[in-house]
Structure formats: C-alpha cells, structure tokens
View 1: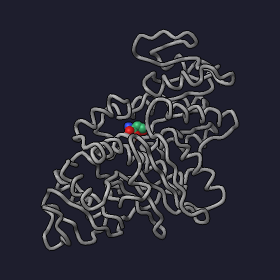
View 2 (view 1 turned 90 degrees about the vertical axis):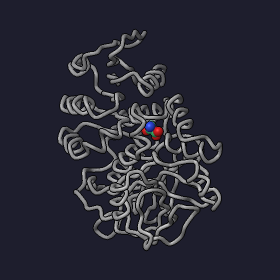
View 3 (view 1 turned 120 degrees about the vertical axis):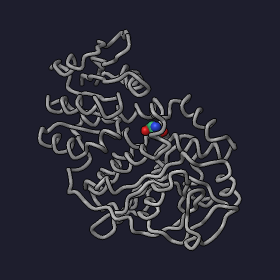
Length: 371
Ligand code: HSE
C-alpha cells in the first residue's frame, strides 16, 4: 500500500510513525503547509501531487475540518483511491454525499478513528450488524469534555484550568468550542448511529447541549447528591423513527459511566440478542487515534470497505420525557419538581422541548437526570 497522507498534525505524525516500520504499507507523500523534511516520504503543499501519482492507492485524510478535506476526499474517491479518514465532522456532515459516491466508484472508505479514538467501536458495530439488530448506541465520546468534567469533579479544578490542560495534552479540537459545545459529540453520534442502524438520520432534528456553562457550584450540587456529570450522546430506535441527542447527564456513583477517567471514552451498544456491550478506551490523542487509522489501512489490504451500505433517510422525534437539572435561564416555576440549593429540577419534559428552551436561554446549564 502506498499512502498519501494529508496533514502532519497530532494524528498525521502518529500515522507516519506507526506505518514507518511496517513492510506492508508506506507513506509515500505527506501534504503539509509548513516546511518539513522527512527521510522516507516526499513532502508537498499541492494535493495534486498526490492525486495524480498513480502509485498512490490510499489517501489518509488527517487535516480535519470540512474544507478542503471534503474536496480532497471526493477527488481521491473519484480518482479510484481508497480513503481512510479520522474526520468525524466530514463524515457526519457529508454522509449523504460520501457514501453513495464510494458505492458508485467501488472504492473503500473507513473512518474507525473518527469515533472513540483508539477504540475499535465502528469496526465492532460492523461485526454486530452481521448477526443482529442494534437497538441503541451512545455514551461518552469526547475525551476533552470527559477530561474537564472529571478534573472538576475529582480534582476540583476550575473549568478554565481543566480546558487549558486538555489543549496542552492535544485532546481538544483546533477550536475547542467544538468540544465543549457538544458539536464533536454530535458528529460522533451521527456517524455511529448511521452505521449502527444502516440509515441516514435527519441531522437537523438532533440537538446538542454542551458543557460550556458548567460551574464549580453545579459540580458541588451533583457531588452532594451522589451524582457525576458526563456529556453523553444517545440514539435509539423508536418504532419507525429514532431518538438522537447530545446532552450533559447525571449518573449515580457506581455505574460505569460515572467512573470514566481523564480523556477516556465509554461507548455502549444494545444489541437485539447480545444485549448491552460497552467499550472503554482512550478517545483522543496521537497514538490511540493513529492506531485505528492504521487498522483501517490493514482492513483495506484485506478488502474491507465501509461498515454498512448507505441506508434510507429517517426521522428523529426526541419526544421521550426526562427530568432535568437547570441552573440559570427562565425556567417556569410550575414545571419545577425540586429545588437543589437554588437550581431547579424539572418535572418530566420531552427532550426536544428542553433543547428548544435552552436555545432561548443560552446562558443556562442543563443536565438530564437518569431516565
Ligand atoms: N477533540 C476530540 C476529543 C478528539 O476530545 O474527543 C478525538 O476525536
């Protein structure tokens, strides 16, 4: 395999290092904007050098962001090259474009590192689907948010201190608002759910609430009541439609989600016959992410492409009702069930309604109570 590697940041460098000693694959080109000299690969700032090199059979996209990643990946697929990407924003946003084109061209596409970093989560979903129906997927999929929430809970760090640490450790996205506003988790949910259910979810109906507004006082209230707050995503079948959402959620101490430390992810599926299965591992960082990129390259050598066929567009309803912790904003007193030292705990509210209210009250922080 001769690889054209797009990007030489955290992930790209990891891929270069992990492929270096392998006899079955070689990074032939690296696309990089800054000056760089490598012993075993040619370096270019012009993508066409890679696209037009007929000896390059595989493109590894590790530049992130939507553009020019989309244009490079589409051009590579059209040129008959197989593509590995770790870019969850790209796959989630352009799923309806990438999947049909890949099928039409008969090229291979994989994105295992895009969800769960070093966990083989998407590969496992593919295996599960061979013999059963996936009923539900979700969990903790953003290492940055988990690190922040864990540091605030166990080490009493401020939100700002914890966020700065995730940036120094290379976990956060280039723009960390993508992490803390739940957008990265939203992308990972879309990719996971589309693959798990073999559909294309209506992404305009999937809400995301993040952790940007959480304060030490919220964490103290949760701790006093035996809860730990985590940012979770969930998607589940609901008749012919689906529930799918991202929101901070409280877990009682002792359940697996409550104990997930640092940048780790815990992702769970519920299968129709196997039941509940959870996967714990590092969800961010150079080597865990590069590990799954290289795994995808090995899968290509074995002829394995995308995890499922492109499926139908489906509706998202989110009409299930949950109780929420709400601090800040203008939550109506008559819909409040309890008061936690100045913060409200609501009566059951449909998920879509609570997210609509949050849009009108962006200064508020919400967390769902266990359903
Ligand atoms: N910023 C992401 C995270 C990187 O913290 O999980 C891995 O996708």
